[in-house]
Length: 197
Length: 141
Ligand SMILES: [Cu+2]
Image 1 (cartoon, chains in turn blue, brown):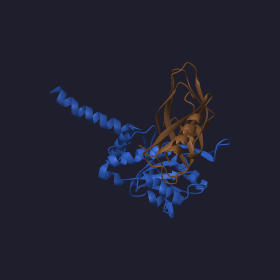
Image 2 (cartoon, protein in one colour):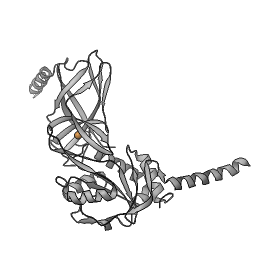
Image 3 (spheres, chains in turn red, purple):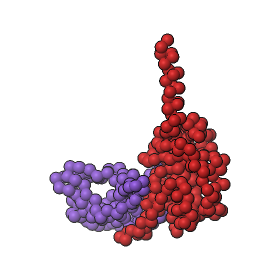
Image 4 (cartoon, chains in turn red, brown):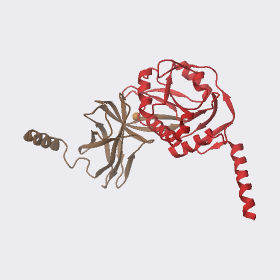
């Protein structure tokens, strides 16, 4: 009898706790989602990519550049795997790769790059000023890092994933290291609005 | 045809004596397949040193890439940075993991698009000579 009562109460307490702290397995949801102002980037299709491109679906944003041999492809592979685990619900989650290397990452190049991982993935880039302004809104940073001994240059960049809700508001962050399973669980939770705003 | 092949292998053998990098064992040598047209690929491997003295790999090159560098990943202030390392050292009776998220062989300008199952050749230069490593291209994830 006691056990039968304790279980629902415990579950209730857990739900309240989850809603209060707004935590995810691999990140945090903001207490209050933050609206994102208009921005002007170019999509992998060569067309303008603006705030409107974020409306109507949850979006997970990853910042990087295609000349990044490890972190970027690994993260995109994990996102593909996590999305696949969502089954049909995966269609309700958009993945956007924001390149902070407009000098080398042309729309054509970006299109080939993200489609290699998933046909549905999108990519965008734009002038450094526009990227920096979006970074201030979303909380990502990047620094060009010339390699005097090496070839070309690298770009130091934030490794978090940013979550935007269907109203194009910044809703939270996921922090590395990532695993497809935990990412999928977090995405599922968000899509089911169990703790989402 | 057969004699040409034998000649090629004999000279390769002479160029890479078996005592080169003595004590060095290389496992899980692999390169991650990348999107077509990728300008850099990442190579990974586990290096073990069965000997009593450290093994230092001072540089690497490859017939399949324009150049090879040793890179480590540094996470600081929420940023990920790639740093060039001038050499790799495997401690005596120890190991050095060249693994995703920590360090990689940075492989610049592939001679062609490599696909899962292809093999690429990397040469490691130690104080005692050159060790040739075949790395298998694998799908990411
Ligand atoms: Cu690198």
